[in-house]
Length: 133
Image (cartoon, rainbow, N blue to C red; front, top):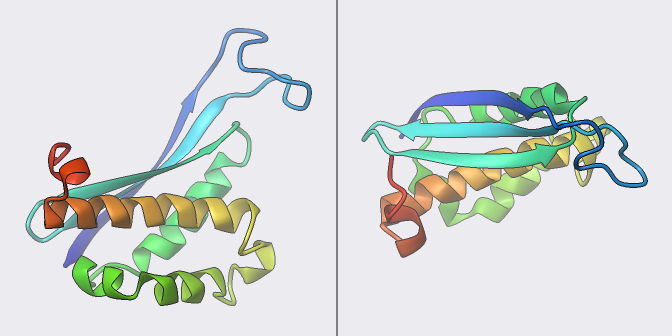
C-alpha cells in the first residue's frame, strides 16, 4: 500500500548560453520528481523534465495526482493502469489545463513513471530490482 508521497522541484542553473536553442534562450534544466513509498519500504521515483519557469506548476499537478494514490496497493493500480490514467487525465479540477499536454501531461508523467518504478521493484523486474531503494 502506498503510504508516503513526496514531490520535489529540482532545478539546475546552466552557464550563460548553455542548453539554449532557437526557442529557449535561457533554460534552467528542471524536473518534477515524484517519489511513492509503500508500506514495505520500497520506493518508486518518476521524473518529468521542464526548462525552468512553470516547473512548480508541474510539481503542484503531480502532488494533486499522487495524493490520490495514498492508501492504494500498487498491484491493484497497475492491473488496470490505463483506466486510472484516463480518470486522472480527465479530472474536472485539472482537465481545463490540458490533459494531453502541458502542466497536466507533465504532472501525470512524473506520477506515472513513479508508479511503474515502484511496481517494477515490487515485481523484481530486472530494470527495477537493481535500483531498489
